[in-house]
Image (cartoon, rainbow, N blue to C red):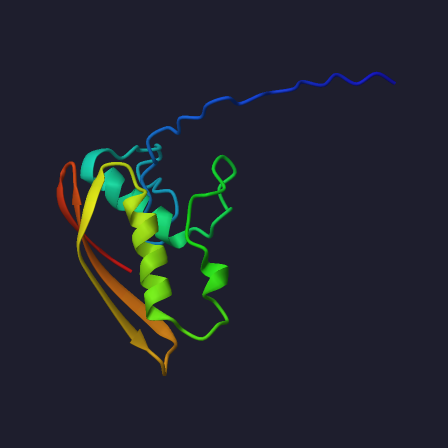
Length: 129
C-alpha cells in the first residue's frame, strides 16, 4: 500500500499578530470574529504570554516562556524568580526596559504577585501578575 508523504521545512517563522484574548486568557470571540491586537495592547498581551508560558510549550520556539519547573516545588528564591520573569519580559518585541518591578510573596497562601512597569516603543505600560 502506497502512502504519500509531504516533508515541510520551516526555515523562518514570523508569527501573525496575536489574537485578542479575554481576562480568562481565552480567544475573545464576543463579536463572532477573530480580532487582532496591535501597538501597546500587543505588547501587553505578549508580556503575559512570555511570563505565563512554560519554557518549551510553544511549538515554533521552545525558548519562549519561563522555566517554571526550576521554581515550582522548590524552596522559594525571590532572586531566581525575579530574574526569570525579567528575562522573559525583556525578550518581548518593543520592550525597551523594565522601569519598575515590585514583587510580593504570601507564604501562607503560597502566592506571588508582581507589578511591573515597562517602557515600550509605544509608551509606559503597567502589567500585574
